[in-house]
Length: 146
Image (cartoon, rainbow, N blue to C red; front, side):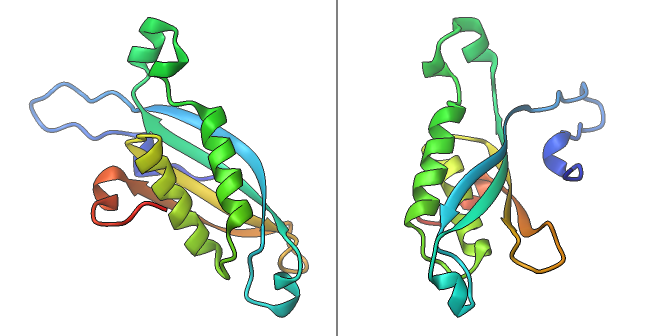
């Protein structure tokens, strides 16, 4: 289980009402396959990756309309992540993680994204190894779309 992060709470300023916690769309244990790795044996076949994704958004419009057009569509995000990972030939999961974060922020309008990318079985004697990143839309300014 991942630890709490600044994405989980919103600080309030002195003299103002406490800010509410952001709305989150979660995708847990998304499986994608990618040609990824630095070792020659990793470059022969696609490997399974496991992704956990937290997308910060505002659910109020979607809740009021009950219309998917007003929601952050987690099914579309999962499909986009799988397709992107499937086309990727990066050596590092760090690079893929950055690209997936940009997709969440730029294509799906998430305010922030926390993303875990894991490679099961990559290191003998472990269940999985991986990275976790958190990006906010303001941090993505100046970066090109993936």
